[in-house]
Image 1 (cartoon, rainbow, N blue to C red):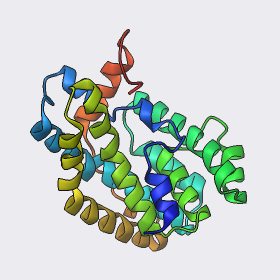
Image 2: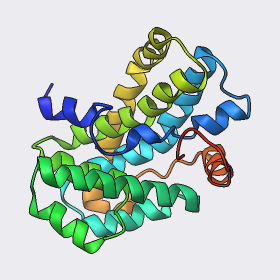
Image 3: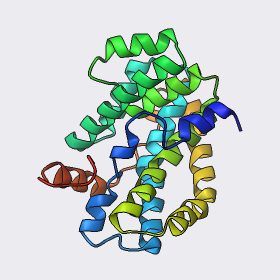
Length: 224
């Protein structure tokens, strides 16, 4: 595995992801996630919906066939929740700050100038992957992993979940991660010829509802 992919996928990478739970904090509060088994179910659903959509956008951005701003608009259209759109742009802004320091690239500089309030995180992730010399499939893999690693890590704090059990949840998701990354890579290849309509727009209505609910909470452990 390319060391750059390991670095980009590391939870300690300074892109702000550690402050976000991927919707699982609200799911815990609602009683839908309460142990390793229900966490696995939550992550499986998140991976095949929001995760697939993000992975395809990241792969398409890494390919470079489509203008990043076009992909950013496509990402915006695929995030119904205003709260989640704001989170995605905030994370994109934090990621691009780190990426421009670690892997200087004129495309990242231009994207930062064009979207001063932040481009969507999957688009930034894809351009960062390209700047780091990674493939579109690598970008898809990183985005897919990111979609589930955050919720799993958050549940160690939210539920007091045994870290070994939490890591086992991620390990059991390996086949799904492989499937989603491959599907995202194929979609990005199709989008190079057919445009952004070829990218998946899988929805997860509960994640949208949870994001809006959590944004109104006075007290919370995670920003989203």
